[in-house]
Image (cartoon, rainbow, N blue to C red):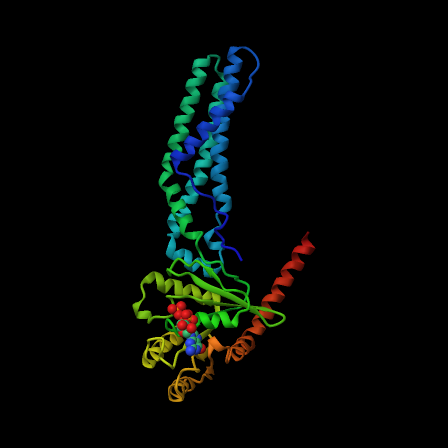
Length: 356
Ligand SMILES: Nc1nc2c(ncn2[C@@H]2O[C@H](COP(=O)(O)OP(=O)(O)OP(=O)(O)O)[C@@H](O)[C@H]2O)c(=O)[nH]1
């Protein structure tokens, strides 16, 4: 389980990077014990300053390039999310700007080291070095807004949810308070983790369970699949779209008792919307809180669900009633997919093994 941007380093601003490089160069120069006459000593010291500044800057920028994943190489789930959080074009331009700066600094380094080597006058050498500093600073200031953009992007990207992409995933939907997180806790053995999700204030709940051979992942996204889609802004719509790459089954939870505070009609309406939006997905419908709902309330929802050719499951999540049935239904649907994913993983391991 990893966030693809986890390794992305902090991106320094132009001034911070300049400052860091110049200070490092001064430290290196004062620790250095050059040999030879006055001119030789000056030459060695100025060359060291130039090389150090160049190395510090290029190493720093190269690390940013190397540790930032290419957006188009990301799994589709992350691509959808990244697209709302950052502008792809600006992001690519920023990365290209860094690449350009690395090459420019390298070229300047070579040019100025050569001039310092030709010079016979310590004053001129110092002047050349100062000129080099000035040119490098101006290269970095040219890309300052790009550096700042990348750092801002990093701040949001490193908060992307951490979910297992190679485990078949179940997404839970339904109005607030119908018992989604209680059901998630009852279904999954491991203590659910809270992963951050930039589109909700509460993050997403992630839990997993096993059927003896394979693992399954259950996620609950508070604030996303619990309100009519018409009330959504563009960003939330995109986040819902991203869920389609992740989820393979939707578990829709009704609360026929209406203790959740939403009348049955409203819950039916939300179900229709989500069922329509996730048309291509298998649905498992749960009628929760049957311990407190009346038989008439339960029957009413059951009829509604059966009319849509789905067989609802009666559940009381707090008491563990019906939970095994939900788990069984999930496994029935996802087992073939889990096997397929496992097979792929083994093949991948074998391929790596043979190549090594
Ligand atoms: N009687 C009864 N109460 C339940 C049952 N399942 C959940 N509850 C209660 O319903 C309330 C809401 O449950 P949650 O699991 O927090 O509901 P949720 O859908 O996750 O709510 P949000 O996180 O706000 O979306 C809690 O007080 C639970 O104890 C049940 O089967 N029977």
